[in-house]
Amino acid sequence: MNKADPVNPAKSLISVQSVVVDQANRLWILDTAAPGFKPPLQGGAKLVAVDLATNKVVKTIVFPADVILDTTYVNDVRFDLTRGSEGVAYVTDSSLTGPGGIIVVDLASGKAFRRLSGDPSTSADKDFIAVIDGQKFMNRPKGGKPSKIQIASDGIAISPDGGTLYYSAVSGRHLYSIPTAALLDQNVSGKQLSAKVKDLGLKGASDGLETDDKGRVYGGDYEHDSIRVLDKGKWSTLVHSPEIQWPDTLSIAADGYLYFTANQLDKQAGFHQGVDMRKKPYKLLRIKIDAGPVLLNK
Image (tube, rainbow, N blue to C red; front, side):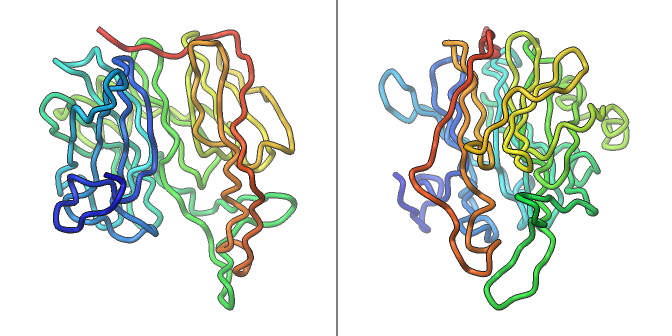
């Protein structure tokens, strides 16, 4: 199914951004339906669940048109299977040109709605310019002028009790949190919801986020080749290495390791006047953390 079908976009994979295994042993595939960061193909942005015991697709949730804007780029997802009859999913919109936000999805009905859309906490920091290897990190197309990179809410993680959602923009250094009860309650207005957002301080500029079963929050620091951790209200550096080139896709496994990729995003040609600076092979790294994954299952 990994071949775009423009006639039936819900039945094929168009441009997959993220894959996450839930607590029911299902692999959820998050399809942006937006190859090359173009406007999403109508009816194509979706979540697809594969039962890992049978390798069969068991559920497909196509996002409704009112949550997928022309600028939407669904990026990452976390699950809480204790909510409602089948659980909920929280998805970040990491738009490059429009409002960021959190999309809440009821897994039983497939109903979804946007929250914190265009909120300062889900938006790129307008004054932010990353510095990597001593150079300003900017769009630098071949033969073109440099421009700021403005990527909205991307990283996402959930607390062990399911009560708090953490998120951050790629273009920014702050971590934010919001009570999930307020996110789920559509009677809580946008203004009221914004007032419940907490700024948890400077973590460094991150792509992916993760949490462990002891309540610690992990985030990459792509400016400093590091992984940072928030423990009991204080940030510290868990690991620093020149091998950690743009850490992303943080995932804690039952073996007590934090896994993450070094995806070299900043080395792409569009940031270096058309010259691709990436070096293969790509790396999947891990570090022992003395904790397990967050498991939110009935």
